[in-house]
Length: 434
Image (cartoon, rainbow, N blue to C red; front, side, top):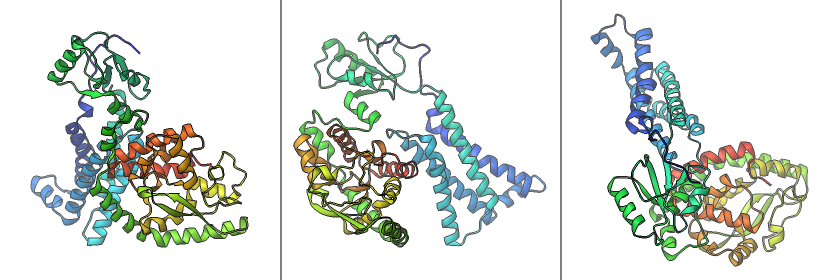
């Protein structure tokens, strides 16, 4: 798409700044409820000495400090989520703020500190209101535009539906609005465009390689022209993987008692619905290409060990799926026994889904670079699952691999948090189930 420069100049504006967000949330979400409660419920008469005495009461002080900490942490998390693709920040506000205040209440109860419940509740709703107000203001404020330098493969950015992108008609900064400039920095652009990019960089404008923009906007990594340098960039953080393993093990042991109860109920339902073993075992390819046996609750009439690629693929409205199996698949409860695989270190809570041995061999023969997805532990849920759902065809597997590579390349606790939150939505919506 080609378009003239927009007027007036489009700017990210005050509402996108951290200072505005901090001031708005702390004033509306914390200071205002505190002032109202001081007037209505606390200070008689209104004076500096009386106000200070009321504020320094242990219950009020503990609740005020705790609410401030919750507000600041929620701001930090939500700001980080804005930069992850496919994340609707507005849908994350309630769970993030509720989680922060829930942790605060748990800490207060565990340490047996005094608290002021009216202030905690008021600040909770105040922070929620402030956060939703900021999101509403940002949705009306125009964000950053992409202007694309012609040449190479940068035209790929013009196909994005998630962000406004226009083609630069001439190598000039005159009348150029506040925008990010995108170019194929590996292409031979010519002297005029090279000089333009240098001038743009000197003026302080952000300049991005087209691949970085495409990955950030789509949540995928292209796999048709991956070079040796790309593979080097795909090597995930070893320190975070060790930390993640410790978190996986601790959380798996913690939820195991509850999971056993739920699995027990599911076992009864499976037994009453159809004959056969309640546990389904299948050989799959895992971390560093090592095969292991994954455990699931049986959802089909006929089981298989993963050696037949045709039987390994679940089609839409597959006749092998039982009535109870459809429910288990839709809610992902059939994956619960994989907590055992997590404890053994064969899987993680979050990561690329492990494929059956036969499917993995098939994909490796058809898709270049497929084995690189084994650089991290496979997961019970993953980036491809919350974006794409169940895969049947080779073309879909190719797209799934792009999601998997994005996860490997951007492995972090932020991305794992996003996947965990979106998995909750998947469970209730049944997205991608077959």
